[in-house]
Image (cartoon, rainbow, N blue to C red; front, side, top):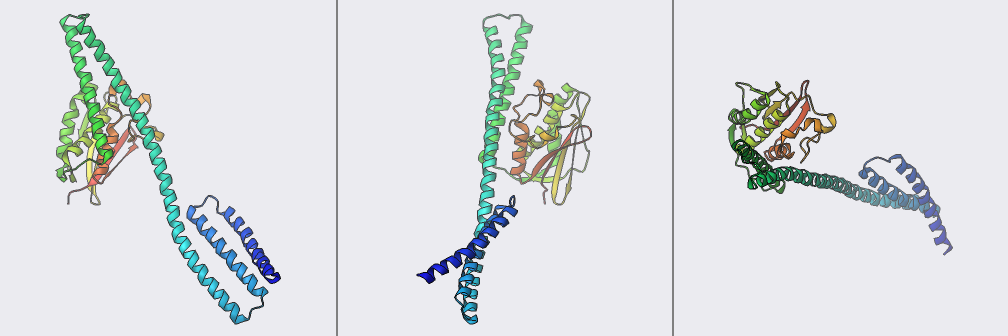
Length: 336
């Protein structure tokens, strides 16, 4: 029993020395990745075992051959333990990082959903209240002169169209988020899509005193679903026209490089705050009030729909500031 107690003390002392050194080493890697911490912990554990075995072997005065056998056995076991530990440590680190990213993404999505509900509630309540007041005025014959009645009817139609667009945007966004979007891919001339989008945005641009210019040639052919791509271009154009002041210019150009086609919509809105650039494609994000006039309309969903549709095509979209405004660039696969 006395010998066993001495063996235990030798092993405990050697392991304690390694543990103290391990504590110092762990403090030195604070802030490093989880994989580094897991690997170091495994190395400390294995080193403590090896130190204990070596200390006990030395104390037992083993022959050089027997000591060599013990060391080889311990080294082989340590190598296997470290290899298994590193492999599973990397997996654990990847899982931890993925879980943290998933929680952060869920937090952002939940915040976006709450913000979306608030915006949509506001954007529906305001026109509904106005429409109800005008309908009640017409029913009670508070207004009866033809010009005022016609104006009320016009405003009711405008508000109804606005709510219909909002509901349509919500439906499109729900299809994107639910993965229910089905794209009928084909070779689409980008020039035709841009031409139709400019024609649709022309009345709004004219009413706001904004010019839309586009290149005459050099438009690539892309691999896309025509209705969804038309919506992407239309949303970008309308967004730029709404935020461009009178006498401003919205420019559309495109090109092709490295097997990708790109489309850019540039405006002269004065730019977007740097802190907002990363959020312009978030659901219900409208930026600061100075960039969101009441006449802009919409529920802050247009650019979120753009990003969802572009990513569904296997592409990407980003925004950056220019000298006079901002520039939205869409990249999608070109037709082979």
